[in-house]
Length: 599
Figure 1 (cartoon, rainbow, N blue to C red):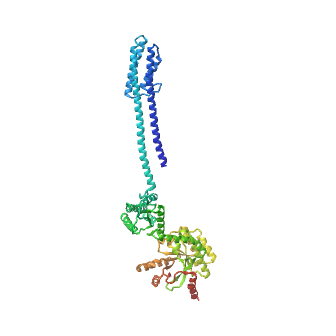
Figure 2: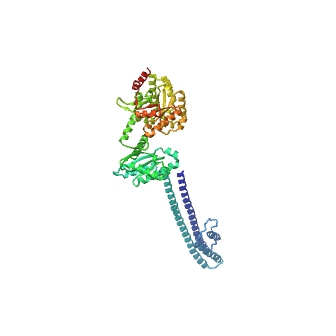
Figure 3: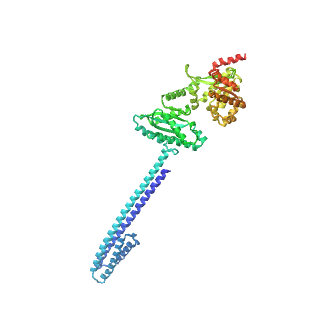
């Protein structure tokens, strides 16, 4: 649209210029015609006088000359002559008209026998006046031509200058749209790439730092405190960036709450950056929440040998890993990160093969009564037996599988192993085993059908299975998934909320989604002595009020057992009784003890 507008203006300028040229051309053609007829007047008069002196009468020429002189004076006549409004020219015409009138009288006198001398003298004066008139007309024409050309070039200069100014203004506007972030006034990512390229070309032996960072939970801040506050926060960060990197750095906003910055490297510079930014945010915001806001950083060192795209990708990669590590983290693009990425790539390459080769092994951790320590169930867990001497723990591969979707296959593989274990040892509903399902798995369209397919395959009573979902996952469940879980609960499955209290739990969540078991997060046992008893007691009382079972995980010491007994928490799980052990060992250690107890 803007290009069409520019072409339209450009076309109008040249159309007007062409019109000026055409008008000037026609005007000068008019002058040329006047000059030509002025010459005709002189020549025809000369011919007329010659004929009269020879006794030849030519009244037609007299009439013709009268018409031409009148038309030159008035601009009205059959020859289409223009009137030249030049005062000198009109004065000369008037003089010529007087002389012409005298000549016409003298012609009559000559025809009547008078002396020819007087006519000859008048004709000489007339010819001289005609020469002056033609010269004046030519001069007026030349001046008009010069004026027209001057006007044309002045027009071109003015319009060209105006167009150039307008064009550069539009270019600045386009550049602003293309390269400037509208909200913060910083350069955008496209401009930042060019800025970094220029900076690299000027580096010698200096080492620079490239950081890519964002504000953790920025969407939550927008939702909780309003978009006005969110925009204010972004502007504060942008202003601080511009100030911090001066005069040697460059910075940009890359949409939403993402920022880039390139500046000279020094030890602890990121720590200084964070601290100064936090102080700046506190100083310029009215809400006292800055201490709760964290930033995640990806960082890499830069020198003149680096390629722009590579270092931008490196910073982005480091930032992505920082987001997976946790809030407020800084991850450097270095050998440690490369080793981690190599490990992740190896995991991805091997995961399907590992599933086929049954390298994902079922581990079980017992659940027990407090204080008797009687084993009443278990939780199924997974360990990856890469080789005879190498085992990977869930934290090393579960997050990656959740991102690439393989977690669905793994969850149901462990569920299948759990059902096979229940079937092999003929476990009943009085010894349920909880199975963890990722939020990714629960949202899968085939979850419900696959769950029933495996249950039916092993003929397992549904009451033997406890479906365990983390509290944070409950917050993301859609109403359709909640309805599906409620349907499973009605069918007899046990629904357990894991890590209760670790996330953003609320009574509304418990009200909308009925669960059978609350599993108290292990972190509460690590709280200060004055707090943990009150918190755990509160959760236990809440569960009893809602007719739910309650179990506390992370039970590691005798003091933990005594505390849970004191607050009447009936069930526990943790290292105090046993670490997670492979399923065969679990059967030997705990199921045989259970069989002996029954005997």
